[in-house]
Image 1: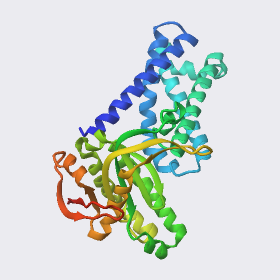
Image 2 (image 1 turned 120 degrees about the horizontal axis):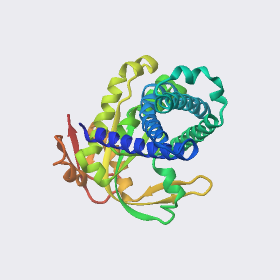
Image 3 (image 1 turned 90 degrees about the horizontal axis):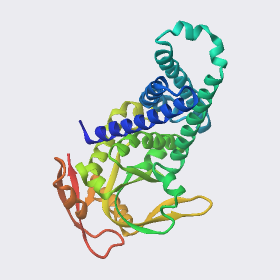
Length: 341
């Protein structure tokens, strides 16, 4: 099993356990103080995250991920609530009525009962709250909202980070070929398609700048199993899988280039009317210059000497020394390495 799969399954297991415990406590306190409530609560709470994960993968990501955020909030909340009602009726029937669903469904007064309405209210609060939080995460950025709320970066601090600057090649000519509106749709599709590869590699999308995306990792996460390199390869694989879609929709398949570098960056909250957690420092400037050098050397991926020494023993990747170059704006020369296919 791949490391990212283990991490995802572990996260799902923790989520299910927390959900099961909370639901069991709720049912014990508000329904019936006995083992039936505990059993039903554990079953309902433990099952829901797994079903919602499947729903997200096979429905939400396909049909709602690109929808209007307000529509996504209402539709997603309604579907979550419907799933909750079905799962709750399933296990209530098992634990309270020994599987006698005929009695449960024939007495419609149950659906107007005090217990049912409390459960629906509890579920509605959870689903709307969860979906609203998810939308905020989408707008602000994954892992950013919590840090802003607790003021983790109110004071600037030094952090060890790895950055990847990745952008679409020949973007100007593509925009001229298909028009600015279609080009913006292409860029949006491209950003959407690469997101899963970023998250699987334990990375974070720091910022979008035109047709460029800046991805960042905590240094240990980037180095472990050469995650930052795997991210690039998985992005390339994903775009290759979607090549027929891009060709049919836009008449062009986007190619891209990237530069990778790591080091000490300064991070902290930036702005007042619109706050964000920003990174600054020479490491970002150098990464940008490395990405620019891809065009000079006709390479799709270049990494700094610093990253090469940290990654050369990780994974089964091979690298080639491009040469020692002087990057724009730098006095000292820098050795750059490319990834051999």
